[in-house]
Amino acid sequence: MKTFVKTGVMALTLTTGVQVGADEAANLVINGETEIKVRTEAPEHLDNLSKIYSGWIFRSDETQALQMDDFDNPGMIFVDQGRDAWAVAEGSEGKACADCHNEPESLADARATYPKWNDEAEEVRTLAMQINGCRTEQMGAEAWKYDGSDMLNMEALLSSVGRGTPINVAIDGPAQSMWEQGRDLYYTRTGQLDLSCANCHEDNYGNYIRADHLSQGQINGFPVYRLKNAKLNGAHSRFKGCVRDTRAETYGVGSEEFIALELYVASRGNGLSVEGPSVRN
Amino acid sequence: MAENVKPRVRVPREVAAGETITIKTLISHKMESGQRKDGDGNVIPRSIINRFTCTFNGETVIDVQMEPAISTNPFFEFDAAVPESGTFEFTWYDDDGDVYTETKEIAVS
Amino acid sequence: MKLTRRHTLMLAAGSAVAALLPMRAAAAAEEAIAAFTGGADVGSEGITLTAPEIAENGNTVPISVSAPGAEAIIIIAAGNPEPGVATFNFGPLAAAQAGSTRIRLAGTQDVVAIARMPDGSFVQASREVKVTIGGCGG
Image (cartoon, rainbow over all chains, first blue to last red; front, side, top):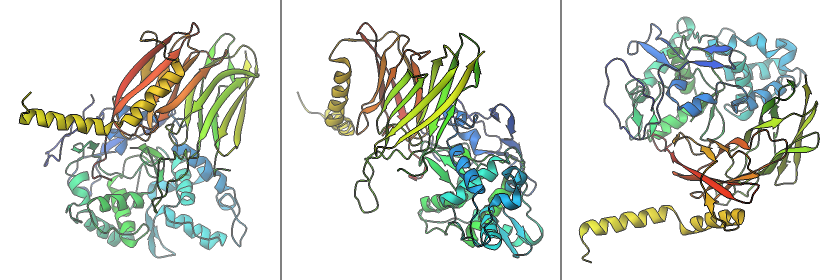
């Protein structure tokens, strides 16, 4: 049985049930060549954590193995579908992604820096918003549904070509106020269970909530192929699930609140590698 | 036809004479079990791939009968002998009558 | 027998377990096994079933079976609404009578693999897989 040895002060223990186990020492190398940083020093803006960990660390041997070879990773099915869509011309301009960006690999650095401020639009954009920006502004095509399968396939493609790149989300400058909004949300308790993100993912990562091994809630691995629903899941949909589980009315997928929260949570992972499409339970 | 069904197969391009190979296959398919209900409480009808076969130059390697307990996006891994250079053929049979195939060449060196 | 409080609790626990494993499913599993073996005796040597002791999610559980020399291996999950999982039939070009796949398990249960050997004999192996439930009921 593997155990996660948590350093620092242990806050209240939720419950210790059947332990699936996770290995703090495990390393992730994809296809025997792409090294993924699954643990590193916490970014300076984080006061309450000294180290940050990818959610991969907290999963069982079997689940971890699914991400070590692209053929075993069912999320790569959707990368293939994203690659097909990359070449399809759409909209009034008759353009495909490939017409401006050539190969998806030319955007290998994109996933690591989103969400980020867009000067022209004067807003913080998630990667999904930027993809839709391309679609509506450059291609004259219809926007894809936020966290819908077309969008997640494209995000999975852009993540897959950026795997190994350190997450590097800017939190200052024009993005700062939205980042602060996200930080406030992260520490705000919601729902009948009266839980904030931090209660589980900062105070109790490494502990068990029933049989579930709590991670730090990092989003460097999104989009995520979940064994639970056997498809790709977006970060906002995951936020929604978490907030719902506190028995609260949730914010909407693509809402300003979740954009702010995504910016903040992404920045908590600055220094971990882009990992998507990852595999989780 | 079921949506977005795409077979993926991993076979080495070459093998030394007398050696065996490991083959992996993955096909995107929802494998609707027939056990789930929709939002209105109606049972969603079963719709699965019910058989998977692999042959080499016409001779069987493996022939799998599949039930609804096989997970979404069915995965198989198995070992094959390669007596000569030739072609692997992979076939998946859908409940709806569709048949998906993929072929891979391999050379014996 | 005097029915003590402890006995009553044990009886209640027993019926709760029975309720978790409906007779219908158990009978269906026996039927599936009988259809494969024709009711023959089943040994236990020469077959390996590999499955996680604890599955993080019952929806996708990786398993492997191996029975050197077997003609066919059937996999049964008696705790599922339908017990059949898969039957691997091996052809002349199978380099090993073995295979891996990913399966659905409705809950904690024994997964059973039975191999048919060329001489008409059968061998079986079983593994208990615990299926965990997510944290907040989500």
